[in-house]
Image (cartoon, rainbow, N blue to C red; front, side, top):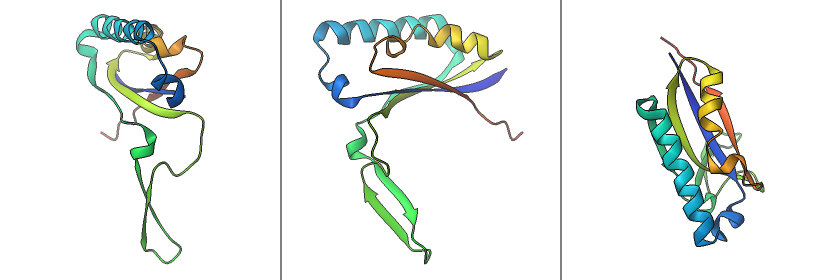
Length: 118
């Protein structure tokens, strides 16, 4: 079994403007995903908006630079994630395709294998 990170990204302004009906559809899709994945879901969380992020980098002199918000200006931000364990990428694709953000038009889902250093 391998671990995969499912990153949910999209336009935060679109998420904030969702109607009650859209939010209900999104929540139902996430519940269906979790039910289908069962114990394969190792973790998953919704994230606060990118505006409240803190970015750490060092300057050319090695001093820590702390920046409020995301480092890069981008239309899309990571809004949440799931960490799952699956036999292969096809299984993950089958599960992740249930997520609302796959078909919302202003968002998407990225699947990345987790490197096993063991």
